[in-house]
Length: 377
Image (cartoon, rainbow, N blue to C red; front, side, top):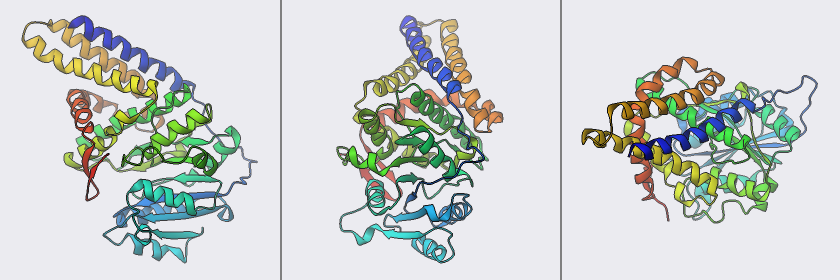
């Protein structure tokens, strides 16, 4: 048992250290002072029951430094049951960019996020499509940085950083640390030319690439994962065209889950798509993370049964903590969240059973999200 555990830690350490090096090698994207954008952008925001946070997002978008003549905003309302539509309508007349409200209810049979994004792509007039969620906050240089990354890197898919803000409780701060690890791994994997994950709250892709890979075709029965499945498809057809936008002004902020129930619903939703990944390198990373956490969890009862020494048990957990600390520190520094490193310790105490639980529940493909019971097909 001890040998197997340490072999899994060795494999896990190799994966994480490679990504630590890749993270450090990621170039920062900075716009030259003399640069003038020329690309027409379409911002697509799929929303459902976002009347409160959507107002703040639209205020942020109104403050963008990007030329108004080169931008439009489409809010795709996915059958909201609150005042989301009215919030958008209140902004339309005074908004600096063309702002359009699209009601999915006006299109027979269309619902959920994939359909909302697909309709947004269909109606958008921009060359580069920039996406975020209705509960996010963006910074004034957000659009300008995406456009510069697109033109300077010739990228077809751009993933951006996401972090949490207004984290007041221990639970929220632990989420911030865990989420930072996902953002960092996704960014570093892109740098390694092995893109595995991104976040739909902050990404962009070209209309041409979306159409050439067939959009979301092939994954229609899976409610989540529209962003990552598209990432994988574009990378397969256009290798080397994926880019991570590393700039602090490009960070999109959202709020952590307030309750344990909503947290697990979100994480099970994310985990439900893992079994549908086709790329071996993506499956390998997911399997390695699952295996090392499973063995760490099993080592506890094995220790109580006398099969593992206390030195081996404590050593294994210490090695796992050290590996994660080395990787998370520069990522949290980039996100201006260095002081949150202290929450790694309580996170490590619950992370192993949490990963196992969400992975197993994700295999069922069944969860509840935004008032809907979802069952992947």
